[in-house]
Length: 104
Image 1: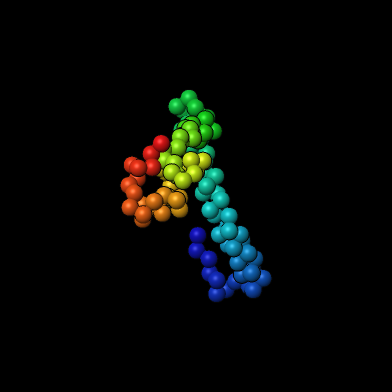
Image 2: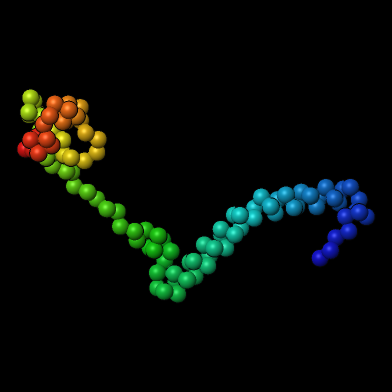
């Protein structure tokens, strides 16, 4: 389809510009919808729905970690060994203690 823009009237050029702008704006949405349709067809061919396959990912749940270390000065302050070291652990290590000295 070849369009001779040089001979088109201004009104038709502006109309064409509007149609092109709209086509550009909706291009990505149309492509996404096309991809979703193809994926749904493939999933149905395999005996699943697309929603079943998308929600099939397992959520890994962790149980809370039990404390491994306790502050010798205040036994209610504990640390699991995960994440950033509490200030009392840092202070004990700087004071010459070893991490094994703080185990519960």
